[in-house]
Amino acid sequence: MKKITFIFFLFISAVVTAQDNEVLEPKENNVGIFLENSVDSLKKNNVDTIITVIRFVGGGFYDSIGIPTYKCYIFWTEKSNSYFQKLSGYSDHKVVKSNPILLSKTDIFYFLNYNYDSIKNDFILPFIYKFKHNNIDCYGIPYSIHGSYNTISIYIKDSKVNKDINDLDLQDNSGEDCLNINSAHNNQTALKKFWHLLWETIKKERTR
Image (cartoon, rainbow, N blue to C red):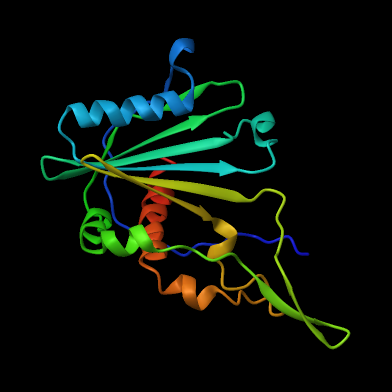
């Protein structure tokens, strides 16, 4: 078994509006509740296309050094504009949220519009590698203590689609002798391309 490092090469252009982080009051400080309330609020304002991402880092020790265990992101369109908001959840139930960010350029919703059916039906296969043991073909799964797991939810009017993605499964390899035999399938899916668009924006905006 091998420990692996996650590497992403993604780029996007966006602008950010002025923002300050806000720590929610104790009665509001559950990250799941806040996310649900945010989606409900957007729907009440007649926003019919919403995307949320919940990102969980496995291991459960990051809180001790001030890094959130859960990170959530919300994307939506309103009056021809695209917006992004982030929130972070900690094991003590504290939630820190940002103000909405106006995205100046993104293909997220254009891609979703033209590939919704494919994204809905696609799935990502797990990272499996092949190796020899005593001249016998064997198969294994790489292992990482602090793996990252993502749940994408797509809300379009009254419908909702959930997709789970493990960062590990998106890699082509974790070394010369550890090639993902499912990468050819995963790389051709609209779901992986859609996730890359989301992740590219998240990486660009999460440090602002």
